[in-house]
Amino acid sequence: MASIRIPTPLRVYTGDEAKVSVSGGTVGEALNDLVNQYPDLQQHLFQNDKLRSFVNVFIDDEDIRFMDGTDTEIDDDANLRIIPSIAGGR
Image (tube, rainbow, N blue to C red; front, side, top):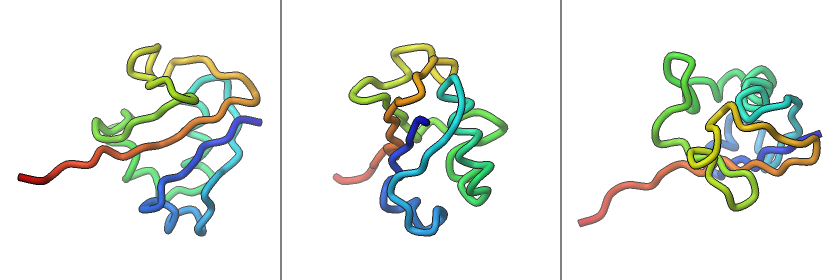
């Protein structure tokens, strides 16, 4: 089963779980399984059923935006990471 590493700011919505096992053959299916398990994540990851622009998803060290996005196929043992964009500074 694939897994998704949850960033610290979002762990409040996963019962403080740092890593969640998910099912699905694509990144999108895995993310949908994640929000089915933890519905409070929906608003933080998606807007109008699309991944929010400031939410980055990686398979190992590869950004899915440079692959097939949420349609990127994954193996059963895939390790995904959600990394929110950080903005600010002067």
